[in-house]
Image 1 (tube, rainbow over the protein chains, first blue to last red):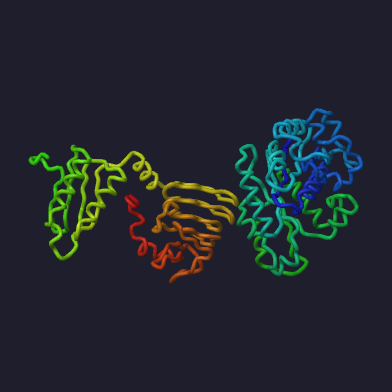
Image 2 (cartoon, each protein chain N blue to C red):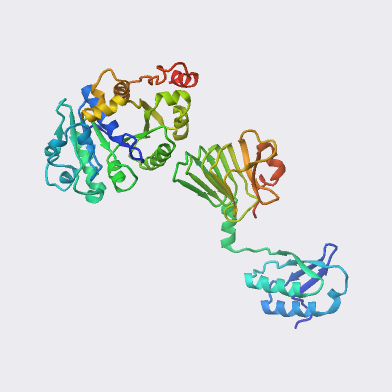
Length: 265
Length: 226
């Protein structure tokens, strides 16, 4: 029986889908059996990020309505055995499935996978409820941006009310390292102070991510990039290893306050 | 009218006029006798206005009855109502009183979109994040950061206060008053362990916790609000 982890944020555009794809890839690289579930019905993206969009035949709505078996809808990744994708439907909306159907589906996927990563749509309506219902763990993604932090706070509040989910963990994504060093964005400990949940990882904002997206390959496949290393570290932390956070300010100089924070971790 | 037993007893004391009602007679008897007794000129002779203390004993008076009696007194020359005392209250009011003297304790983070309400005082051990809200009919005490919204004295008590270890609120309401960025009063050091209250000019201001005992000396008393 594997873990079902929902990846959510409240706000759109903070990198839920990128995070899902890269953590999934990293876990698969570590030899785990992983399935990614795209619950953003009507705005399907995860297949595009993974470069698997031309292989979609059946989707999540088909499975939930019994039009095909789960295994028929799963798309095996072209790069590894261990990674597969259950795409969202494009020609339907969030109300096409209900929470009971989603719960049953996730339970079934948990049986033969180590990790079920659920990519949650933006917002806190039906799509969010569908994504959360089957999960037993949660990752909240935010950026160093007050509105993203506010939405993350709201979502953490909603997740805490779900009795079946462990306390959510936080990923701070798209950190502009130059601006962070100059104190022009929210600092990491400012964000963790407000949200006060466990920090699972910090990910820099890097042009390589955009280049990788254009090539339809998750950045986690590139072993040298710092973003890739960040995602691989997150994957290893999910497996229970303790790995220190990256120092995102090393290429600009010494910044005592941030260093001190990293020193503690 | 029975002259042996008076239904309305009027006694003059140093503080003023004390009026006692018979507990067993009918309400109309009291009104009749009160009107009759006050109609004599005895009470309108003096120069100064005399305070009246009404003691209804174990008789329960409804709101309109209380109002009627107050009118009769106030219409009489040189008299005014000072207090209206009764030994009985309704169950409803008793329950309300009990709730208002209770302290609701919560230990968690109040996140954006969440609300905690209390009929009495509210003690929160944890932070209130931006967008989170506390509402209490009594006082609000936050052992943590107050970054959201706090509404003390929500049922109309302007004496209520908001206390927080770290005061950085979006908005503070006390009773019907509202403040976005509370003005700092004397000795307030960097919004640390401050409290918000309504000052004499009906404005919400912040002050250092050291002055709380001076400004709201009856805060710790149990019978507050009863």
